[in-house]
Structures are given as C-alpha cells and as structure tokens.
Length: 603
Image 1 (cartoon, rainbow, N blue to C red):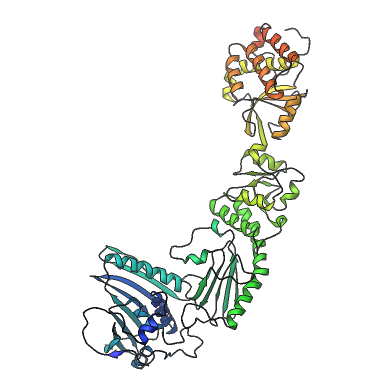
Image 2: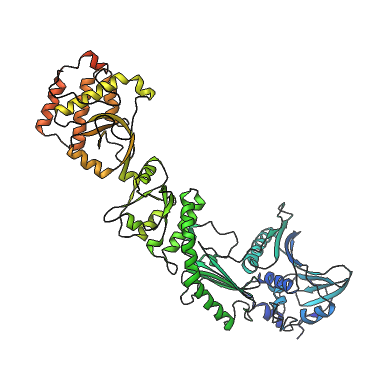
C-alpha cells in the first residue's frame, strides 16, 4: 500500500495531508511530537551510536532535524519499507523496536511544509523530499562517504511559535528518549533571538526518584524499584522530567530505553507507594503506540517488581539507614535531607521497618557513636526523647553522661521521630536541660570588680544562713540551655570547690530542688540575669543592700512568696550596719566563691 505520489508540482501553502491512509495513521499519535521518538527509534534500529536533534530558526520558518550515524538507506529501502505503510524491514527482528512500518508517518503530525530525508551508504547518497500533500521527489545526491540519515522538517512558524516548538521538542525528547542506551543530544539555534545553546544530553541512566532503590539485571531485562515516601525531601527533579515520574506511585516500561508507557494512575496490586521502571527488549508497544502490550513478558516483569519490593528493597533500606544517619550527624544540608527521605521511607509501607531497627543521628556522639537505634529503650517510662537542631556544649555534656540527643537538622526529622514513637514525649534538649559553667576569677572583667563581687557573694551567703537557708558556697556562673532567665541555681556541691567547673542538669530537677532549698548545696548566680547584673552594679557602692535584696529575690524565685518569718529576717538584715571596711574589700571571701560566716560570729 503506497500512500505517497511521485510529483514535482509547486504548492503555495502546506495543507494537511489529504484524506487517506497517511492522515489516518497520523491521527493515531496522541502526542504530535512523538515523531521525535520515532526518528530516534529508527536511528537506533539502524545501529546509530549517536543521534543529534537540532531545532533552528529560519526567516519565518523553522527546521527541525534528526541526524544519526547508522547504516543509512539504499534506494530499495526508501522506495520499499520507508514509503510503504505496514511494510516494515524490522518485522521478526528481536533487536529492533519498530515492528509495524507506520512510525515514519508521524513526521506529518506537525503538518510540515516539507520533509527532507538525506541518507547515505556504500559511497552513495539520496535525497527524498516529501510534501504535505503526500507527493514526493527522490533524487540522486551524489557520492558521499560513511553512512547515516538526516530527516529535516520545515515548518512556517513565527517567533513566538518557534519558542514554544523548541520547548515542546525538548520535553518530548525527555519524555520518550531519556533512557536511550546511546548518546542523544539536542541543540537549539535561535538566530533571531540571538541565542544558541550547545548540545544538551538527553539520555540518562535508568533510575527513579526515590530515597533508596535496588536494581536487578537478569539477562536482557533491567528492573529499578524504590519507595516514593520521602522522595519529596530530595533535590527537585530536572526540568523536562515527566510529572508522572514523581507521583505517589509510578510505573515505566521501556525498550532499549525508549518509553513505551508511563503511568502514575494505574495501580498494580501490592505496589502502592512504589516507583519502578522496567527496561526489556521483550516489552512491546501497542499498534497505537500509547501503551505497552499486556502479554506474558509484561506480567513477568510485574511479578519481578513485587519480589524486589518484598525482599531486596527493604534490606537495602535497612542497610543504608545507619550510614545516612551518621552522614546527617556529620552535618550538611544534603546529608540531612537524604536521611530524612530514608527515614520517611522506613516508616511507610511497603518498606516500613521495625521502629527499634531505625537509627537516629545524634547531636553529639555517645560512647563514640554518631547514631543510635532502639531509642525507646534509652528513654524508659515517661522519660522524653530529647532533640536539638545542632551540636553544642550542652549536647556534648549530655552525651558524656550517656544521654543521647537526636539531631533534628532537617525540618521533617522531629515529626518523623514522633511518628516512629507516637507514645513518647519529644522535648527540646535546650528546654529540658541546662549546662552550668562556673565563672572563674581569672576572667579580666571579674578581676576588675573582684572586691565588690567578693563582698556581694559574702553578704548573700551570710544573709541566707541567717535566714536559715544556708548554702555551702556562692559563685557566679553562666547558663546554656534551659532556665536562662533564672538568677540562681542550687546544685549539689561541697564547701570548697563545687565539683567540676561545668555540669549538666535536668531543668525539672533544678526547679524542684530550688523549691526545697536544701542546706549544703552550692548556689550559682547567673551573671546574665537582670537581677544579678543590677546587684553587681549596686555592690560597687553598697554591697550589703545589694546582697540582701538579691538574697530575698533568690528565695522568692525559688520558693515563691516568702512566709512572714523569712521576710522579717531579711528585712532585719537589710537594716543591719554594713560590714567593716576589710570585708568590703573582699578580705573575708575565699577564692572561687563565698562561704557563710559561722553562726554567732561578730558582724
């Protein structure tokens, strides 16, 4: 059945193909830009190693060409399989993709004014010129070395239409040819717009957008499978990638990398939440070229995908999670995003893992480990799971005490931690714990005010002792973490040096201890609180008044409103005469803090 007519008549405008087999076959292509897939496929079937697509603006027109370095065509090939519908030279050849002899007709889907086919082999070249009315001219193009074919479509397009045409050509190549098993490039020459792009690679490895994936290669079939859960935390998809590939579920079927069928809507049993691709020479497209044939090869591929999801994919996720958690703990936005993606996959079917198997990154290493699994066992009873956005001195102190803090350096990590352990409380480490750092007199600012500070500390110690709330010693400190607004902290300690220079404490325990105001504890004054700052300034003039007022404020802060007896004692102390001159210079204050004077000692 030969639909083309040999003729050289002139035409004023490119009308659509006249009614007949060509027009009927053109209508089968739902995507008019599928002609690019068909021409790339022809080049691949011709053994091409490289295929170059070029879109070039001409005065009032556009030339779109596809050039391959395949075996080329002889005159017999042109006048036989190329110009005859349903006569395919590839029929029965398992190495060829095209089977039906209708693909080349797709070049008329865009209603070009003419289509030029240049082809050369065996030292001879031919030029076939097809017109929109299906007439054609075949000319001897003279001698030419090598082999290959170039198909060029000429269209009448204005500037705006050219820009849209170039965009759609790029999108079509990405849709239909992005996994081709050989080099495919696209270049766009916009002379009128003054822009020209270099050759852009279209082909890319067979892969899926997923936090983790497994690839199985068996004979000539390749299957790639991964979960969709968590993929939203990864880098954005490349421009031009089909939107369907990033759906909740995705299935793609390919032959030698050319797209046969892709869907995010059709669900296959047991594969909800799964993205997969299958490339196999045994898969074939339907006659309409808009789907894959549902034959034995198709259903065998679906069965293999299900096997990979149930076993290898879950094992791969479990194996890679610890590495991802350690990378997230090391810092960096990319590592944190990759871990968050895997974590969500580990909490979602069909790749959900046991919560106790899931490792979490730690803000600071515990016993040398950057991540920990089994957090539920480390937070028994009602103890909260602690989180922090970064590593610092507080998380390091907590880690030294064996207390893990989960590093939540990605916006999704904390919510996913709560999802993993729904019954557990999740609290910020900096709201639940505090690090107390004792101030040393060697600091320059303390040296300059040493006398006044020493007198202030001594007055506070004596005032609390006479109010029957004696402490072992009084020192200045800095606070990191919780309760930074408080002025004083009662911590276990001795009368000389209250343990280490810094210590970590649970905020709830500090508040409960302060309410009891137990004797024998060390009192630390927060140098960043407003009350302590004002008292230190006042102490330079009147240490007695400043110390007694601060002692009263400390008791109110710790115990709430004072009972009448405590209030009367502190008022009596405020009215007492100031200490002798030597005490004002700090002679009575021991190094590192003040201890109360023995009861009954002369004032």
